[in-house]
Length: 465
Ligand code: MN
Ligand code: MN
Image 1 (cartoon, rainbow, N blue to C red):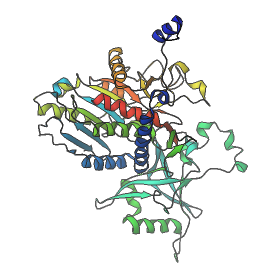
Image 2: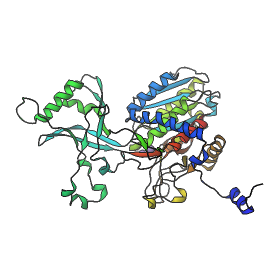
Image 3: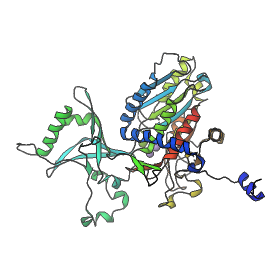
Image 4: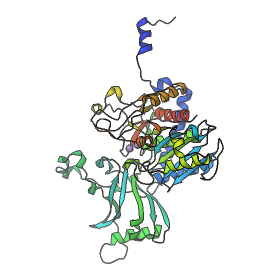
């Protein structure tokens, strides 16, 4: 006999109570989450740019029986394929038992993160220091990117077309880079600026050298010395910066946060946490009913425009190819397809409670967050998932034992943002945002809960299976 009163029973039946992942998971599952997150941490440390994430993904996919996609081939259930888009986005698919005419299941995450890009002509010398001019990428609070160690990542296309990969600042013993900030003693005027102008865009100059060319004479010998080092190491000359994508990212590694090690701090959880979990869900998905597709896209942080972003048609073309192999048109497949737009949401921060509405915010440790709509100013710029599809995902999560919560991106009219959801919805696909709550989003050191990360993996896997 339960000692619950009739009121308790009625309350249990009628009142919605968000779950805590730690309470809902058993010890074995919490251990599994810990192990899963060790691999995730390694992924974060290995992948600080979209190109690095694609290289990691293709290496993993090759090892897991995926083969490069051939548009002319008719694939069989269980076949595993992938297609790389310009080295900066990748689509992976496990072919389902059902015909593509029944639709496919898509998880879409992004692998670009806010960062500091070099300008086309970045290198200059001023008072015997060499600096690099930058143009930040994505939405950042610029002051957060000063006075922290940065590493340089990217690719340079030399005059003869050779592609050179650059990574400086990740290996032990590597030099690092830094954007300097003013000492407080002389910052009285700077401190009067508003926070958004505390450090201006044109003040994000990266310190990159201080020693003149040994035995040299004439002007700008420090710059010449840096060019000499770059030429020896990469075969490049100054003009080659014009055909390069070089970017500065935080140089420190991801690590556990808190006495209890329940969280991970690191650069680029947005959105590599959903990229990793949705990629692993595809890798671990054997024999799905519906073809399971994970797409890892670029350019989300600048609005998804460009040929590697999801506002472009590369995903649609891939679906068209799948459809044609079965004698179908792409739209026959798309209109019956479903998608989890796998992206992070802002977790409630007890230090800054005023920007979120507590009854509709996501919280660290309460599982994966389902975000019905994003947008701003009266839901502008969002796809707002239909109740029917949200209901379907809700039933799926219930069956699969997924700890999940609903979340909004901030209070009404507080701000807002968007994800790739609307671009996929525009293809006539049912889409809803599902991802991991993040603290300090878009900062150099974002924080997630390990249990939420594991729930995201389980959620994407349940969606595919
Ligand atoms: Mn994101
Ligand atoms: Mn973002």
